[in-house]
Length: 309
Image: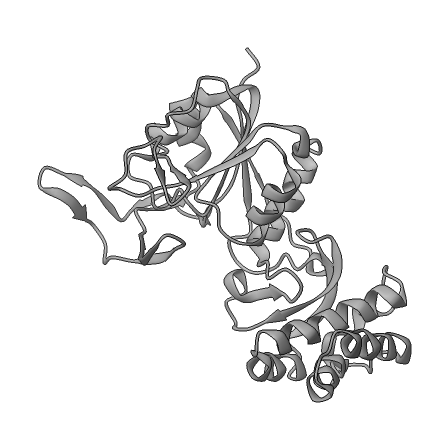
């Protein structure tokens, strides 16, 4: 059992939770997370912020009717207070499984570690991003929502193999990253989040992104990066269609319930592949910051910069 949460935040949290209509039993269990961890004392946020974070966490669990599984994780020590780079608030993070990369949630905005890492790196490499021209391919999740909300010149696209690139489906633009319909040097930032492990002919996509970026523009992206080994190609185009070199593996796809096939497990040579096909220089940003909920595997954020001349 961890240290008991201070009375000030506990009472403030109860008041916040009750004010939002959270049932008393739900509020008590989430706020009782004395197991949140010792690092909350001293905490950079003030008591009202901590109380508000706990109250919002309790309210969200009650609203979404997901309290039971979260309660088990909270009271067993799989939660902590911190500051979320996506919603920019003092929050509660809860680990729903041992695979933190996809399950260590912010109970305020629902973000996961790779999304929080991307927002943190975006603030570092392009602090003026809210005033830039941004395109995101295949957006999904809390980080995409935050960027879309804060950047007036943001637009996005999804990919459907049966839709012509540049046309619309249900009000959403279709783009194929290997043959973009965007104009040359029209963007300051191109963002992809866990897209490039699914792209056939990824070398064409890196070249296309370089084409549409302005000089000095950035491709900021996440991808599972196996930095300790060479790249593994799991599938490729063959004369009779797709050829599987490894057992098929699929990840979730926001526009296809069947998921997306993993084509490539990118290894240590990823920056060289990008440079060879686009002339962009790539830096890997590896952040581990428990206070910001940036923990777990494959949390690196890659930043490829187009030459200025």
